[in-house]
Length: 175
Image 1: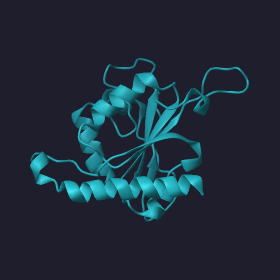
Image 2: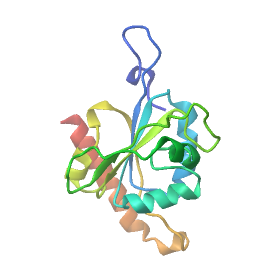
Image 3: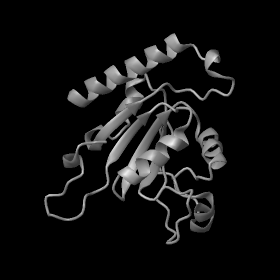
């Protein structure tokens, strides 16, 4: 959990939402999001950088009943689709607002909204697209979604990608 000062306010008001960077798409992402959601203040954002396309991500999240923005699919259908940020970039960045429905269903994320950036986790230009200055924490994982079993993934390659991504992030955040 990020340090409290990352989300504290100087005006004495309630804590602001935190920004968590999630670099790579991990098996069980839904479980990770469900674990983070109650531990983060309302208005928090998880920014996912992965080479997986938005359609693929939408399909994976839909299996768990979530829309791309973290709302339940039922709430999202009544609230309408999110809009593109209007930028035309090679990485195709899209932002989706938090659920607007007053009645939250058990499958929706209550405190967190999701933002998606399509790009490679080891690409410095893709990492620069992340809100590094606002980030309270970063979680770096291998950008895989294995449906054939753990043995089908080359662990040396995924370990190398995680280390490379983590070192690049560290360099970008300290420079």
